[in-house]
Length: 575
Image (tube, rainbow, N blue to C red):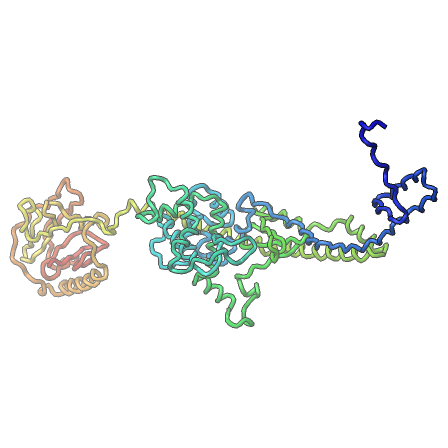
């Protein structure tokens, strides 16, 4: 061996029999190493495989499974118009029961269709204005200037007041399905700002206030805030109406008094829940085979349908709106049950078995539902239709009356407030003491020396009085008929006495000879004077004391102190 080379590696160590081999791997024991050639002893027996330990039972902890999620409830779709919204029927039923006399037949309101049209009207609506005025007066009946022009400010103040009540409203912050508010209600005196912040009209005003509009606190600010009612859509208007109805039912004194009177509220056992004696209770007119309930809130063709009203979701939709639709519904109620359905159920019942009981129950329910439908058809035709015609006639009379009042108001502008004719008091002239132009109308005396006056009554401007011309042409002052008749009777008695005893006549100093009677030409209503002298003892003559005028004019209306003698000769007394 070359000493320069490295020594060879030592031979591998041969394991001794006394030393146990290392533990084999868990997968599989390795084969025993080959025995060296030099070893003469027999190879050791292979090591025994280690005993596999029995696995311990594993405790499986199962996590508690969550309860299966409930099936999502069917959510009703949003109504596309006011007619399909349950709040419309609710508000109209309230109007019919509590404001029938003050609203229906006034302001263009006759049935629920007018309310629906008013909700959909863009801008100002006369129907909605009339309803809101009545609702505001239910809270504040002492308002004297309630009219369409002052409605906005009173509406804003009423909503502010109602938001301070200790009851929830649709404008309070309340989670869905929870009847407790998220925050305490702003009912205190210090919470006035919070209540105003909940007012929907104030919210809308702050959101879209125009530059030319006043602020809320300045003069005319409440009018500008309240006018936002005419800018709301039909959903917001209906929401506000419904909330005002809720507030009236809970807090209006007049409405609460109506409820107390009709329900006879006192002791619970005495409360009247009978729809026949309590007009405020509304009961369905019946239920059809499909379990749909039918409602009639007023005497109109509008009939509503609903599901179970005691469930949370209960849509209230119109079934009929006109008389033709109502007649068609009556015919549907009278349709018989399908013969195919009856034959099928009877065959199932005859076959027996578990299905027979169900078929029998289904047949009985169908027959009972049909009986109810026939009864509803009878009630609608015999009782409801006559009420509809009677209500239509009443509304037609009310409409004509309103038209006549409108015409009278329009004509009142051109009328004068004075009921008497405007005239100037005539200036009476006696004995020729007037102007020289009237000398022709002076006094005249007969040959016996008795005085007879036939002077004309002229005004200061020379106008001849037309009192003696005819009753139609006389435009002088009005005189009492009762006093005139009394004086006429007295004068007639004196004239009759003078006719029997001429010595009782009072002589007067002679007067100048009368000139021929002349007619004032050109003046309307001139009076012709008597020609000649009335002879003494003439049966047609009558003479009164204190000087008199004898005119040959027959008049139906005699003035104060006058008398009518025989043959239509009128005697008037001059003071």
